[in-house]
Amino acid sequence: MKLSDYDLLQLTEEELLELPEEILRRLSVKLLIDLKEARERLRQTSRNSSRPPSSDAPWRGTGDKNNPEDTLQDNPNTEKETESNGDEDDEPVKKKSEKTSPKPPDPGQRKPGKQPGAQGYGREQKIPVTSVQAHYPCACALCEKTLTPDRAKAYTAFETVDVEWAVPTHPGLRLTNTKHVYYEIACDNCGHCTRQSPHQQVADVLTPTIYLSEWRLVGPGLAALIICLTYRMRLSRARIQEFLHDWLGLAISIGTLQATLHESGAALLPVEEELIEAVQNSGLLHVDETSWPQLNHLLWLWVFSGQDVVAYWIASRGAELLETVLDNEFKGWLMSDGWHVYRRYPQRLRCWAHLLRKATGLQESLDPTAKQFGTETLWLLNTLIEAIYIARGQPPNQKLNIAHQQALADYQSRCEVMSAAVHDKTRALAREMLNDWDAIFQVLAYPHLPITNNEAERALRHWVILRNNSHGTRTDDGSRIFAILISVIETCRLRQQFPWVYLAEVIRLRRSGYPVPKLPVALNHRV
Ligand SMILES: [Zn+2]
Image (cartoon, rainbow, N blue to C red; front, side, top):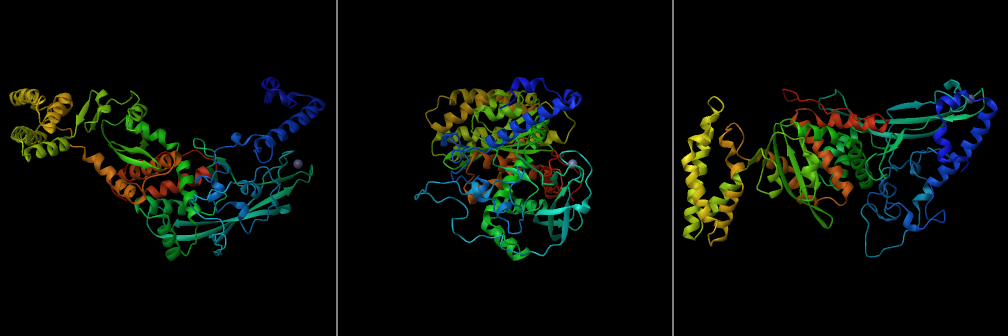
């Protein structure tokens, strides 16, 4: 290194522009040497340097399914029509030589996706080109002189297959195949050759194996269609392959489908903040969780369902996720089941459906005490439900807790007696009633609030079926991507907006390096 961190700290853009030419020249040489050395170091692995294998990034050469070099069959360097000599530093994806980094064969474990030697898809297929887009550099990278396309030479090209809406926001698709041609132009002023290259960046939050790149076989609209088929239609990757082949004549590998889902989820990650904000601003929030397998771990799929947001996360069942999402900012009503982590929220509501089911169970018991307590509980809850329904049709602030004070007091003393009952389930229900008394009967003071958590249970139902079909997710990244994708889909649907138009737009913008646009606002009528 020619220049230390301390040297660099002292160098500012303004000062650089003021420097006399001779000094500037000598400084440029130092900077060039340092830059080349730094770029080389960035590419060092245990394969091409003395670095120990433990210093390699975990996704390199482990057969991890997140490894884009294993799954990404629209990897530009495997592309037939690529004319690039592959010398460019800013080449969109890794060199082919890196793809073949040695991997110890593991006979016991078959890695997911395409097997070595299996016939590939996608690259072989020739789809008629519907349009050509030329990408020229505008100015010389060295002397900044404006470049004119008349001396341009194409150096690489790739095709992006896409589906586009014939009329945006309305059904009806058109298949397109755009050939993107990238040019280089030699400067007639200084002789330096400048190349225009496709935009590419590493997704900011996830492991740096996920790239957002314009260099893709799958266009943004087609990516949105794949997301729709995967999540809303719950089709397996193999079924999606079949669908795209039979209906659009597209041959796309499982690896490319997988990479498309990962890239799309990564593109959407910044939306998480907007979702959290919408959750925290909800006046009434339904929260629920259901078990979710992630390879060998048992995790939970959480849902936060508010007036104009449905957000999902996959996490442990502890209080961490609740604390992170609600973060002391949430001041509304929280409807949940009896799971203890919810107890920290004073404005809490309990789902009566669970209590009614438990009381019905007791009423059908063969134990006389249980039968009696079950009948009493059912009678009280049903009487109160009837009163709540009537109160909802009347002016607000009907204080049912005062009107039913005596019945509640009687029932509370019954619960105190029953909390020492010999019958397990009787004792459990009595204790649950006492522990959660305020949360259960709070609704009597505010009868317009809900008495069930159906909203949250409905928001989970579709994904429970998907879980049962697909056996959950496999990695932390996979879980995070799944959650953000379904949150955006369901929030758009709740707001009566087409999720697919928004998704395609996000993917298009993020691939070109733009920030994520805001979620569409709620419409009053269904599109
Ligand atoms: Zn020049």
